[in-house]
Length: 200
Image (cartoon, rainbow, N blue to C red; front, side, top):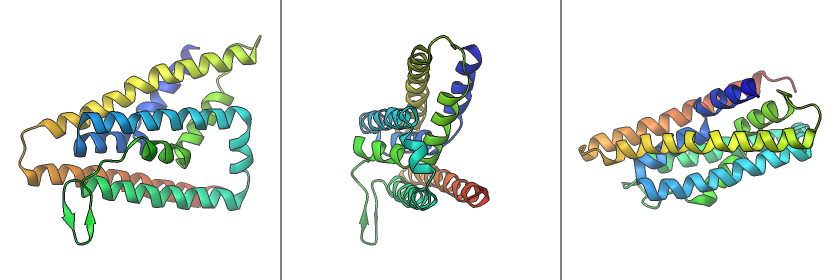
């Protein structure tokens, strides 16, 4: 169980679409909108975990066409969120990005987030520690995962909000938002690279 807990911690604290977008929303919009977004991520994460447990995720990801559609949707949505964060509070051409992404945005991100499926699959199907009962082990894993997921994401939100609250010039805030968005684009590039290398 200790090995599993350490694996959860290491997988959850590493930058991925969820934590980066959480910090980005916090930096761009503040605590309340960020908390609303995190609530959607939380529901989405647990939906992905249930999809892995029931085998639905394996069924979907086992079909190359659906896997490709999921990847394209994920990349497109991450680009959209990155643009919202980068343009927060500004007008660029016809784009106005004053409203923050809400809980639905967080839920949708996790529903199409390849890292969420990969992490949940690795954690739920691996690290067996209670062979006497698969049910008890699965429930224990979900409990541990959520007990770590919540403070990790709140920590990333706090980091973003701290940047938001600093008395920085508007240009500096804009640069922070753009850097957050660029970090998300880096994740997009890694996701595309990983998908291209994966056996079909």
